[in-house]
Amino acid sequence: MRIRLRLLAVGVVVLAGTLALAGAEKPDGAALFAKRCAACHGLDGKGLSEKKTPDFTDPKWQASFKAADYVVKLKERRDRANPPASVVGLKDEEIQAIVTYIRTLSSKKK
Image 1 (tube, rainbow, N blue to C red):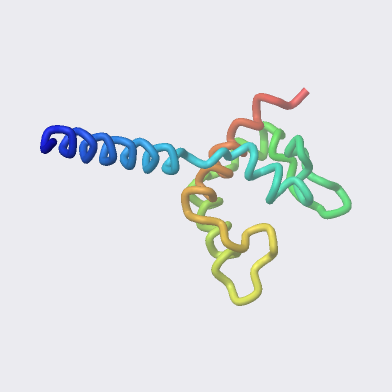
Image 2: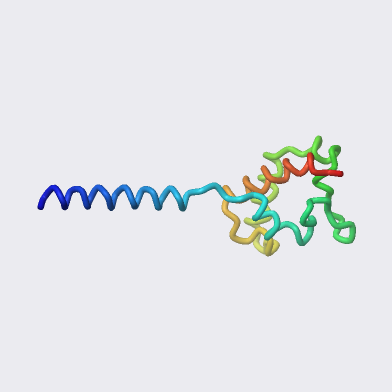
């Protein structure tokens, strides 16, 4: 009986650990970009002229792009008194995932 209880306890701990790891997956930068950024930057990242947003696929823009600076910029927008809706509630790791995704857009320009 004690062995069964111990095995059951071990099984519960293993299951709990597995569920915790599943919930700790890295955020999907592409999905976050589509949901949070595309309204102003375009789904393809090429920017919207009417909103005067940059073309993230432009090699010149990418060459000047410093990921660390962009992370700071998004965090500042998120943390100000009246942040844009697109950054409200973003976690640090989500911001990092978005910035990492933006870097991938340079190879998608046609």
